[in-house]
Length: 424
Image (cartoon, rainbow, N blue to C red; front, side):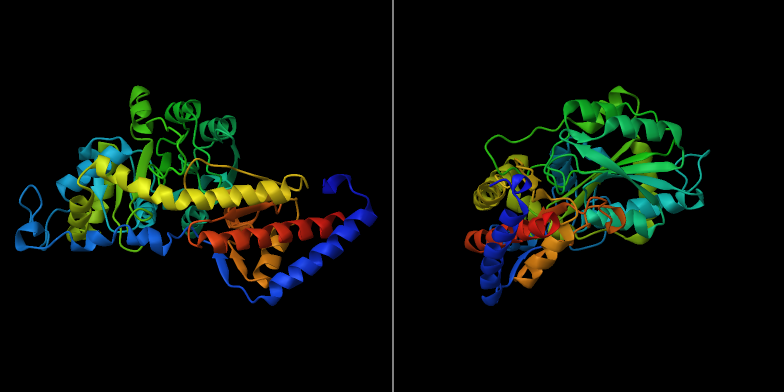
């Protein structure tokens, strides 16, 4: 039934019935968590053999003879640089392999540019008055946390069905040299699951920023994280930038955090020779080198790009039923009520739900009281401020299918109750 067309008496009757259902859920004392995109234990188990991939003394040596137990190999072992080059679609010569966290590499990149001039005629970002950063919304809360920490004013950029509003991006960056960058999750964006269209990628590559040191933070976290048999395709940003003489614009990031072990994966960044020179001057003082044994373990386990794609099919087999449950519950419970909209992504880790304006915080509160933990409402916007109070990020990966089904039942009841409260 369409809540927006119901009379007040009908709305109150519907609310009374749903309160009884909700109270029944509360009495069960449930504890279900859909707050973060954590791999499930079953997903982590897929990579357990990785820990046994180095069994003899000889196996500690990389292909070029580097003893991975010792110092050396600052940029990462060569075979791992080739491996991430294949994932990101760049030459291994432009790849740096770090520790387990791509977020850490992003933080270090911003930190580096805060104190190092990217060109002789530009200032370190720290010295730029009223510095700004563009933030597609809804987006990734930890991205916003980084630029917030470094004192950037964060400007929300609306997300369309094919990526960020490029008319707005182009206008802003061409007019304001205090804008120093933009966050991007170009494939299966967090949280919407949108993949940037070819046109959007080409427009990014052709940007003409007023700031010579403007940078695109291209977080390709879900580059190979498909959950359907019709995966999205993402145009190669570095190739397009080279065509436009803009090779310095993007800095690319990815990791195996949601592929092997989220706390013990391997991360990498890729950048132009110019950007890499600046970043390496900083990093060489921060570390003698990251965990080469872990890099080697990953290479021995996957062997090559085809090996990791085959591994991701196993993840898909575990994740696809969970995404299916989320979408089926939303369709069956909320579609007719017309109080919510949601994405139906072909991959990634999230489903983005927009509930009735002004009710997201209430939905999250009601869910928590009934034993279902969600990401805080507003987290997908800079400063935690969703102006419509409508966006909620659903993370289906960690619960079992049965737990997820129950959690989604509760979520839908809470979305209805919050909407009824608002409408009445």
